[in-house]
Amino acid sequence: MSTTQSERLRGLLEPLVAARDLDLEEIEVTPAGKRRVLRIVVDSDEGVQLDECAELSREASQVLDDSDAMGGAPYTLEVTSPGADRPLTELRHYRRAEGRLIKAQLHEGGELVARITGVDDAGLDLEVPGVKGRKPTARRVAFDEIAKARVELEFSRKPEKPEKSDKRDAQQDEKIDENKEEA
Image (cartoon, rainbow, N blue to C red; front, top):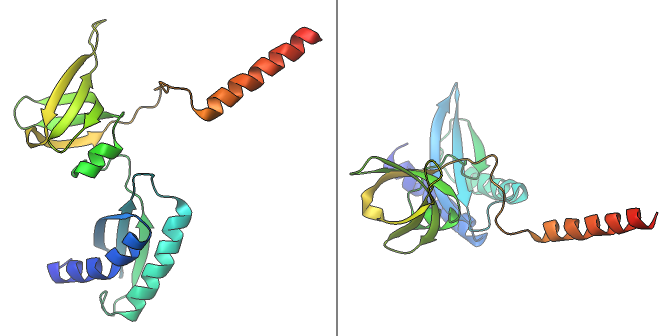
């Protein structure tokens, strides 16, 4: 995608995205056979719902149809949220990943896998998991030390604090137990 096309698309789409309190993370045009795919990636601190993507897609489609930003060749429009494997490149990405495990490649010092415990304008506070029964250790990493970073997917992590629904489930379990005792 040429810089001019990218700038034109961003200029057309950014106001639509911002009006929904979303961040325009990426615009990508890729060939797909005889067509092209225009992929718009949006995000927010609260995440992005499917309905928001659908509504934004309809609005973006209308704006793009009314302009010549995509030229005359056919294209498919995709509006999506970033995947879990998206690189962490902006301060807001790190803030949204607070509490999550990340893998960071450092400019000097190799690779680091740690949980983000805090984020400020200068860098990250991390908890590095202990190895072989050792306790986790705290570490501070400045943003300029990080070459690249991504969130690590965790499939078996249990929440540290019970969610509201968990409390409700626990109360329901207690009622069930009380009913069993009465029977």
